[in-house]
Amino acid sequence: MIRNIKLTIEYDGTNYHGWQEQDNLQTIQGCLKQAIYDLCKENVIIYGAGRTDAGVHAKAQIANFRTESKIPDYAFAKALNTLLPEDIAIKASVEVPDSFHSQFAAQKKAYSYNIINRKTRPTMDRKFMHWVWVLLDIDRMQEGANYLLGKHDFSAFEAANSPRQSSVRTIYEIRVEKKQDYVKIWVEADGFLYHMVRNIAGTLIAVGKKKYAPEHIKRVLESRNRTLAASTAPACGLCLEYIEY
Amino acid sequence: MIRNIKLTIEYDGTNYHGWQEQDNLQTIQGCLKQAIYDLCKENVIIYGAGRTDAGVHAKAQIANFRTESKIPDYAFAKALNTLLPEDIAIKASVEVPDSFHSQFAAQKKAYSYNIINRKTRPTMDRKFMHWVWVLLDIDRMQEGANYLLGKHDFSAFEAANSPRQSSVRTIYEIRVEKKQDYVKIWVEADGFLYHMVRNIAGTLIAVGKKKYAPEHIKRVLESRNRTLAASTAPACGLCLEYIEY
Image (cartoon, rainbow over all chains, first blue to last red; front, side):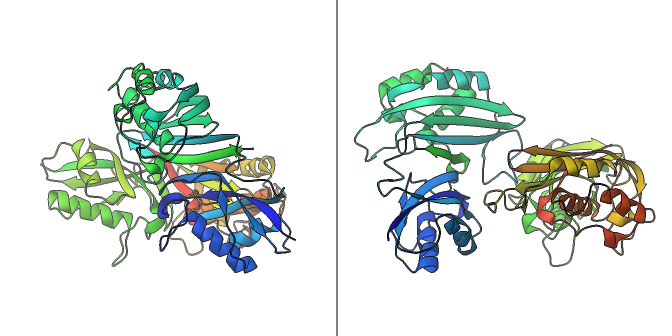
């Protein structure tokens, strides 16, 4: 009997060339495929909910694969964790209907973009936070972020040469929070374009540094012109937080 | 003119054989000494407030050294940060009276012991948290911890063959806090014996797992017998939080 198994995956993306399998490069999908092969002796196809870039982290990436193995669904997590490298872990494994596809069935996704905002470069946080030493004005960042709420064409925040048919997405929530030296940009949407969160983060950081007024975000958004947004914030600050189905 | 410079140092201790300089081994003190040599061409003696073990982290270790260099005191931080490896950073540098000694002048020290308490092994936190998969009972841990408050002979929580003359220390505060999957043991004292926080953490974890009653802590403390305490918790969970003068 063939079952469809859904995995919830956490990873430290520092040492990987992103999610997607690539020849001769270490990727999350490639490591998962190998671990499943080691466990079940099956060459499975793994469908991921989203392709995270090199250096991007995930607290709850979702993937699914089909297997003929007789292992109980919940037991995949523990078994795979003994086979996976120390920077990838399966938090849960569960059988789902055959129709389930982790990418197409996703209703909502949330990412955080994490900044350490202080004079001194980070040590312990250096792989999980983007360091900004200019003091950020959080209120301005939130004011700018508010222009992004709702359904918009986000072309201006999409990487050049992206393959998507439509650049329209809906942002349900976007919050800029500060706690001690840590600034978190939290974005929840029905989906994200390639580099969208990192481009939004880069532009909001420029607003927080007072390079731009908060209204600049509105102008960039309406222009649909990628060249108006600030530079893409570094991968290490980005973390896929959750995916809702 | 010889000045006495005090440094506040943050480090990710993962890749170091602890604070103290050792021949042919990478240590925090050794890296600092080298960076100061590169900057000032002086072979200085660095006095550290406390010797952290291999794998232990610090948010604000304190050290001092004497120099003849003409660099303004505040400028050492920035200059040394360009010379130090990415896992060590100077947060502040300031001139102090010649009588200041970072170890002997310390009035209070605080350490945190950081635990990730969930079924799945950690990925992003694996170098900064000790993983405990059995659900910990925080109330029991705090109840046990309360026996340690105040002035006691902490021999039972000191590593065997420790060189200290007296094992009496005063714990001013000891808190066990839980937030989502994270458990933090926070201890503030006038000083700590060798392995004291890690031995306390190991024993409190055993209480949290219900291996021992909270009152067991009192019996261990009063016994002054190291063999009654549970095993030393791993170094990666320990972080030197601050030192007060």
